[in-house]
Amino acid sequence: MDIREIIIEAIQTLTVNKLRTSLAVLGIVIGIGSVIALISLGQSSQLAVQNQIQSLGSNLLTVIPGAQTTGGVRGAQGGGTSLTLEDALAIGTSDQITTVSAVSPEYSARAQVTAGGNNTNTQITGVYPAYQTIRKIALSQGSFISAQDVASLGRVAVIGPQAAVNLFGEGIDPIGQIVRINGQTLRIIGVTVSKGGTGFSSPDDALYVPLTTAQKVLFGASHVSTIAVEAKSQEVMVQAQNEIGFLLLSRHQLSDPAEADFTIFSQNDILNTASQITSTFTTLLGGIAAISLLVGGIGIMNIMLVTVTERTREIGLRKALGAKGNLIITQFLVEATMLTAIGGIVGMILGVAISFVLSKLMSLPFAISPSAIFLAIGVSGVVGIVFGWYPARKASKLQPIEALRYE
Amino acid sequence: MIHASHLSKVYKTGVLETVALSDVSFDIKKGEFVAIMGPSGSGKSTLMHILGALDRPTSGTYILDGKNVGDLSDDALADIRNQKIGFIFQAFNLLPRTSALRNVSLPLAYAGMPKIEREERARKYLELVGLKDRMHHTSAQLSGGQQQRVAIARGLAMNPAILLADEPTGNIASSQSAEIMAIFQKLNNEGHTIVMITHEPDIAEHAKRIIFVRDGALRGDEVVKKRRIAK
Image (tube, chains in turn green, yellow):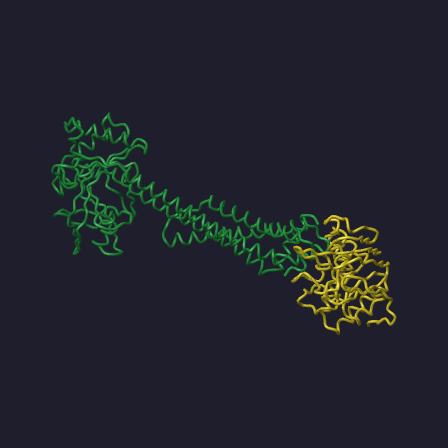
């Protein structure tokens, strides 16, 4: 018998014993499918966490008024008045600053907003156009605050989806609607995409107006409450922090950094936490993968051991009819390889499908890990083939008469 | 055809030694139909395993068709079983859920015969045992007698030196036993050498010669005087 005939013989044996074959394939499918589904789902969650952190804005430095050091009396955050629009413009234009790509001066306050008969208390943020890129604001409709709006003290606003529902109700197009804030009327020109998140400062329950309009028309303030700065890259965050610190100290005529009347936060703290979460995730995933591989491997081992041992008498008969030991081993090896190949492909499809459906149900991003697929198929394949081969080898070494008598 | 001289077989389990066969000698010539008779535990199965090259004797020589079987390797024994011996087992030992045709083709495949020739031969022997219409039936679709006829066709397929039957009627209805014996006698008339193991005297009387075995030793060797002819 040549290998082609052995393969045909193996296909016949597998198709003739449908129940046995499907049980073996099922064992392998579950082994491989569960590993792929678990690992992919874990990676989806990991990706979701990363995306959420990214959506806060990466490479972000936040300058707020007030001293960094504790001790002495300190105003509430955002209550200080030491930062001005000029400070922000200086950060954007000064020769001393080499590592900054965008600057967004912001003035935030809460106010009562009314539209028609509805009113709501919400966060009003005066912004420059750069706010949109730095804070990663996406619009579902209309346009964001433009430089022209800022220059002309435009009576326009961009509204968050939650605030839009609060003011105009469901299903009403907010574009072109008029809202009143502190006795002034503003026209809605854009609606932001929902970012998720709830609570007091949800980005969905907010109104964005030109910074100049907020300062001069609505609230009568001359300072800014925050300057958000985007560094050119992750690597220059510390350098950017230092450059901004020195620039602001000299602008505020201070010589001792300890006396600084502002504080610079970096995104590093958040990123550090994130990478800790990520590494915990990775460890957890490794554990889950190891356990599912073990369980899957044992399942495959069992089904192969049982199906081959069950066929000891058949092996005895084949030997009595003149089959040599090597031929028996080759035949079982071919059968085991086919079983694991079929089970591997079906298990892979099933695993990918399960992780796809689950990630959609849990609204996670869908991630497929090729290494998980290789690992699952590799380990299950080796286990399936080894435990298909080992009992067959044992049986092929028996004297045919012992194999024939085997119960 | 068969030359057995001083065959002994001793099984060792721990310190216990069981003598299954001691100093058995006989010759079987081409064209003979021999029944080996004896009660269970007499050693007739052990003798059959040695004659079938399924097992090696502890001592003594066994020459089959001019070849000394005692000192062959496992693979060479497999070739002997494939080419020189046609087995017919008490429990038929057909591959389950497999057609009669494929069962009969199996030893031909192990001999390396091309597929077309194999099927042709398998058909020929299935016709010979009267199963022309049931070539594609699986064992579950056949009666005991029909399954044993498939096994006979399989035993004949390689045109072996001897047909070795171990209680061929042990698992089938007595009404069908006669069919099997009729086939054996017909094959013997055509020149096939048959060695049949049985404990039933009326089955043994279908043969031309009976060898009696008891307690692992030869107790008699006689020609059947009033031979039964099965129809």
